[in-house]
Length: 68
Image (cartoon, rainbow, N blue to C red; front, top):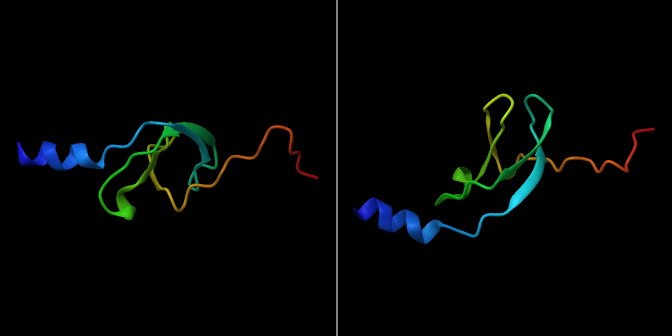
């Protein structure tokens, strides 16, 4: 039971963010997985199932921004 009490303190309100996977380079929207230390915070890529740390997740480019 102690484990659940520790995890409940780490919960934050869920918000969906858009990011780009550094492995498969596909954009995706996901909720931030919050853990205790900073290294346990990140996203799970739905395409390749890679855990992407928050610090490594790149923002997906806006649709109105075109590469020249």
